Length: 368
Image (spheres, rainbow, N blue to C red):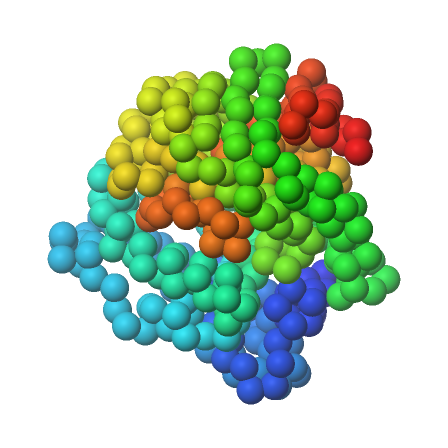
């Protein structure tokens, strides 16, 4: 018998997050590790009248690819691979790693090469989403690997994840809409402002210009779980230093203790306590990788602790995150890159966010 929480999550994703309509094509991308959730989403799409199409891979496929592929194979993008990004009406992506460190020994240059080859897929998805032609949802299936990274048993991590997704609500399909008032209000308050200053006692002090940029409220329409509002900073405006609080995994490599110094929007100095080689390699992927594509502010106070998974950690209430690389077009951002890498700074112990001289947040709590 399938876990009822999985059915509730599938209902949220299909009926609320993407609102699948009859006749729409729907891609489901995942590893076979997530089969129970894949099946539940498949059934919900059929109930909604959509056309589900699977894009599944074995659990060990990605590690084998980087181990065995030649240069021409690293650069190759099969036409069917493009379909979920440039043609499908709706795309579902499920994170379900059996080993979050499976790529830790891969040469970062090979990963950068693959990212560059697939840059057009990211661009297609972002552009179509901004035009309202494409809807997508990203979620996570709980595995022992994620539980171990979070320092939890699998049962505890399942409880943590599903609670963050609001699946326990009496009406889970409408739960996120009822949770949306606060994040919408904060996005509206911030729209039309110009300068953001982010500070923490750990050494972060950075200013960004967001003049003319749109703040987007997030309450379950793309990420699940959710809870943030974000924008694309003016590309040449970042000045100062940011020291990120939580380790993060990018391309299967854990990078922690990251410090970045910006001058006129560009990273001019970077260091990390762990994974520095991978950080520096990624920064050199292309011209846009050293500039910011996103500033996001977390609003989900139900997620209280870091898990090393950005899908969860970037939503923590009392944190902000900056993404190196590609901007989301709907914000007005124009930074172009094959990279989009979010990193998180905790403001809950003495930090602040100041907007045009007015405190938006102090010690992780909103003041407006």
